[in-house]
Image (tube, rainbow, N blue to C red; front, side):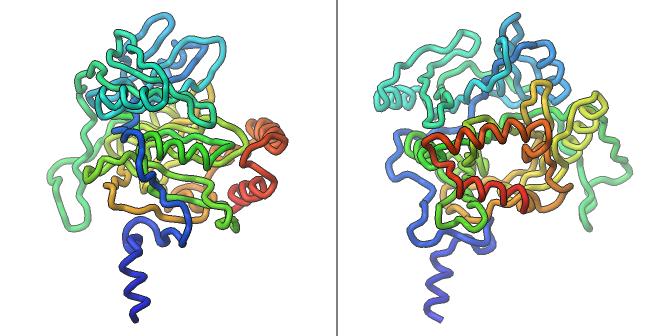
Amino acid sequence: MTAHLRKTAHDPHDNVHSEHGPRRGEHSGRAKNPVIKVADLAWLEFEKPDLARAEAFARAFGFQTALRTPDELHLRGTDAGAPCVLARRSARSRFGGLALRAADEVDVLRLADKTGFSVRPLPEALGGLAVDLVDPSGTRVRVVAGMHELAELPTQPPLVVNAGREHRRANAMQRPARVPARVQRLGHVVLQSTTYHRTLDWYLETFGMIVSDFQFFPGQRDRGPAMSFIRCDRGTTPADHHTVALALGPADRYVHSAYQVSDLDALAAGGEYLRDRGYLRSWGIGRHIQGSQLFDYWRDPDGFLVEHFTDGDMFDNTVEPGWAPFTASGLSQWGPPVSKDFLGTDLRSARHELRSMIAALRADNEFDLRRLIGLLKVAAS
């Protein structure tokens, strides 16, 4: 009886978000003394050869255009703040990195002092200050503060729903329009790393981020986690379940990014709008387990994976990380089976993935043969 009470007192996962917490000695999911604590994800940067084509998809996906020049495109949501996406004209498509929003300009200066990198002003179209870092995987991470704030735009209000015995809508019908799902804001970005553990610790120690959920390859919990969902530490103010998600894999690369919309009807009707215009749905509609959000994944014309989401989990800093096996079937509570396109096992992706695996196994990193076996089990599970 005493042992049972002791276990219950130290296990914050019962009836919260994950059935299991850490075992003794496993990663705590947070740093004791981070350099700063970032407040949110500010924007993502891409290079694209055809900005007109990129803007056409973006408008169909639900973005608004904040800035358009012959060489640059800024895309925004309806929330006040900075643009969600900065796209620049280039000869080839490439993910250019992410920007994290510091609490204030003092934190940008503190980070520059601690890291030895210089602070520089951002372009006038954005305003504010930035310090540019590079994570251990080689991804550029720009930390920003003091930007001009774009005014809030009219949003797409969620529908009034009759749920169970609660009748909030009487003498009125539901007719959601088949229009773009109006993006409200940038929610998160998912990255893959060949140096997963070192990169994870860098985000926690540099930016004060904390892990919401860990996942491990089937049968390899003894090797530590292979996936982490990381949120901003805003104290008692809840933050998105994950702002950055990091996965161990055979290449250092962008996986996908996610953008919030108002509700399930906006997400579903927006998906019909995209489908009617010939765009490729990668996977959806469904509800995730880690993060709980409703999701719908699409490929843009340059092959980048982007997600509409709504109704995601929000955690304050009292929630400890959960632990679960990393499996394909465990990616959703309900919805269609996970697609080969999403997993990267379709014919279009398989050849590139095979080359990445061979290169990773020959290099000095965390992706060894046992990890390859674990990753293959994820796709098959």
